[in-house]
Image 1 (cartoon, rainbow, N blue to C red):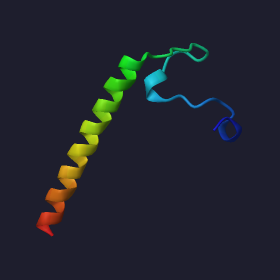
Image 2: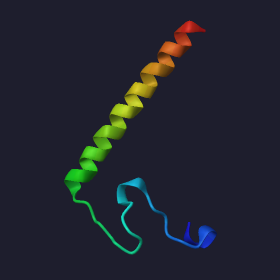
Image 3: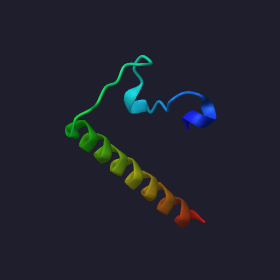
Image 4: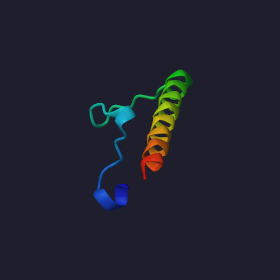
Length: 54
């Protein structure tokens, strides 16, 4: 990423000032993973509903 764009990747979990580093603990990572799983499940349900209409 750095070679392509000339700067480091800034993921939404770490949108602080450039140069500031925030390392989140395992608790924050677990919460984020749980939210991602919920979002994936909701997308899967929506996709299934959409298939049933076609």
